[in-house]
Image 1 (spheres, rainbow, N blue to C red):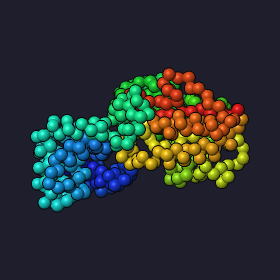
Image 2: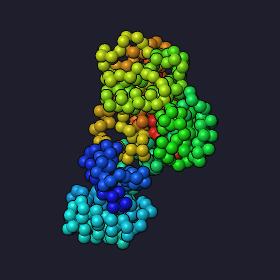
Image 3: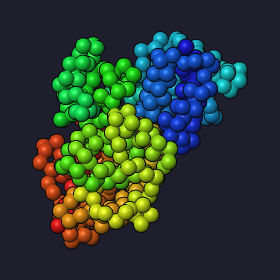
Image 4: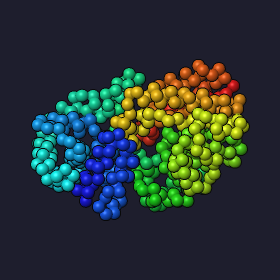
Length: 426
């Protein structure tokens, strides 16, 4: 089993190192499995891929010290990272990791690679403490983030930068959103307890599971009684302050988690849900169908209202804008390696275009909630301040919750990193 996990994880990691999205790479790798994968194998493969990306700089820093004669070519470079993660951060038997990695090397790169892989991994075990100490001497090796990312966080948050980088290394909790149209949060918590699942209350509709489980094991999931959604993301519906019969636009809605929450919370809402990607809109429609709610779902570019808007103003607009994802790295560790410094100003420019295009669609007295899953100021506080400077008819409304720091939710044990700003049209 370990040999197959190493082989598939290596195939997935090789794609990621070439710029592929983690989820897509894992999907492609699973298709190359020799036979049907068990749930345990799938989970183990995912853990290895995620783990390598979580500790990439540390792993690379240690291995580079051992590559004295030659640098391994793909796929051996990825295989050695996979095996190193298993040796450092899992309970797998060391002899099994090494022996299976040698077998995987022969299969992936030919028999001549066996001695090289065996030698590198056995030297790593013999010199582990010294290699680890030296790898941690650089900020990249210590915090397992790219240097430019570390510098940005340190500059923007000089009093808490280390904690933010360390929080991004933790495993994210599995958080549920209870559909209050079907049952109360407390009732659903009792259902979980009866099924042997312990949970902790978070927010108004949320429960954090003590141990993650496949969604199929959640009571009533297929019937729409519950969804998986981080506690920070659940604030979107709260901050919109919905009233019955309102006309609401969810401008970047797919895959539909927040759209579903709006419809669960509001009575008789007319919700328009947009996304540019037809495949993602289909997923959103599937999500809403499971929740037994309806919205006007449309494949559309939110920055071009003339192509889709009917001219009737909205009472509420939710703009969950495309962003760097810097607040959700613990859930998507590939983000920190796929992002580039030049992506941030480009994303900020796209967010500006969205805000300016959607603001005229809001009625006077209505509110627009701007959200990102980012901790970078260019996308958050600076974006909000610039928007207010461009629109004299916009007033920012305070968020009266101690969790927020100038609109920012920082990652912690119960929350992903998120930013919210509420603008009212005066």
